[in-house]
Amino acid sequence: PAPLSSRTGRRAGNSNCSSARTTPLTSAQPSARVISPHDMCRGMVLLEEIGRGACGAVRKGLYVPTMSLFAVKMVPVLDDERRHQMTRELTALHALSQNSSGSHIVAFHEAYTDPTHGSICMVLEYMNAGSLQDLLSARAPISERLCASVCDAVARGLDELHRRKQIHRDIKPSNILLDCSGHIKISDFGITRELNTIEVANTFVGTLAFMS
Image (tube, rainbow, N blue to C red; front, side, top):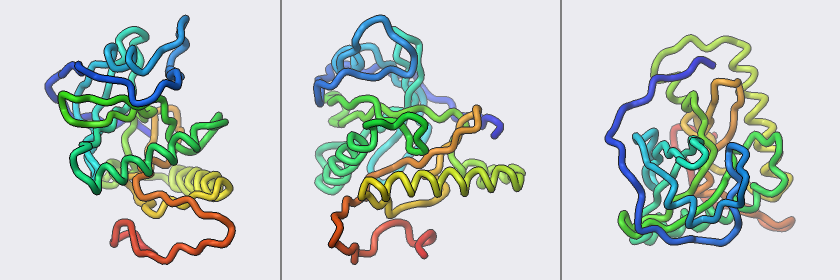
């Protein structure tokens, strides 16, 4: 897909952060040293907002030591409901990040606290062509080949989730991300649920317009 023009915004630095966990970061670019969560926090410069959902804002982030771009999802921790969704999303992303090479699920790199904004920051793979919703909103022509690629990628991503006993529960255009290399991935795991072999999901959650 062709790249989408992004909104511009004031550039803001990220400071006074502390590590949310101690697992080393896997950088989007090769690095000569192990990067800790605190290093990630200190080296991250937050750029413009690229999305906003029920849990919080997503901003483009530049990790200066490697000049790598990431998506940084900022979730306020003072809101009980958002904190609960954030905990569920972190748990799902951490589980899904194991052996995720070639995955159709957006990659999770790290998480750290940002006391200045009262938020937990989740460092995710940056998909530089935006979402399927962006294409629909721009009324951009969508070829049959792209439609087929989206269907194939989403089906493979859901199969990957289901094989790991996870259900997404909020598949919609804004949660299907694209990049300029043609990769298509599922994002936003705030209401994901893990099932064992005998459980049945019997609650109504998600986005009403996209329920079936």
